[in-house]
Length: 372
Image (cartoon, rainbow, N blue to C red):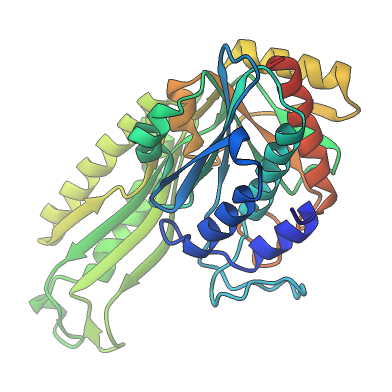
């Protein structure tokens, strides 16, 4: 097997969108096939992979999940290993996630433990969401772990640091798309039209009142409209408009409340502006909730048995579909410090590759303790 740095750079060059990760799957499959056949079993699921490393005397199965898709971003790092796919980039660190999983997998091929290990290379985390259907698949059900773990790179933390907390780590999230259809016409005759630019602007302002007036101030929620499109040219009143955004909440109950209020406001827009409206919530991700007992044991172990710094962080409004797996299987996710001045989803994100060895050390050490 190549060095982990070489693997990361290879993967960084071939980012692919959700359920289109054909080159990525082929690269992972080729790498894993180089391991001894008697030590592993491999299953494909769509563009993902599941790999079982057979334990010596298994009593349980420990799972590790790595997401594999990229983002529709044009890379601006200037790296020699920059993306070769136009308008595609591993701007969320999934190239790191895959590389770390391969490093851990390789370690346990050569250093077997008693328990079985399952490595889940999951497609479509960025959208439309691969975790929930993968979890429900026959392939994963046949390899279903008793415990499950994952990480996410964190540009804001230094290399050598991991951050996590028990309980809620990442928020409930939902995409939000609202299409408005009215009646277009000449700019000189507004009274003969139903202007969807005006309707869209009104709706954006009304949506902001949901958080300030319908959510408990001691709870937290966010509605962000990141994109508005509408109309054709400057002297034609727009017949159509579209809002695109996201909803983030710290509780499932708050998500339900936010959606109820959005639907009520949209009905009001339909009446007030004599138009039609369609709401689409797109991809919806369940909160990432770290199992308390597992998390406390993990924190204690890493602090006492390694030189890695552990920070107990606050919850974040970040969305992650790993939450669906934690909903069904005990486990945890942690942040891995990669020390980059540019944040997640930024075209210049360049994580420090020294963090790869830190993560492999943390996971292999803990799994060796947990599965011996």
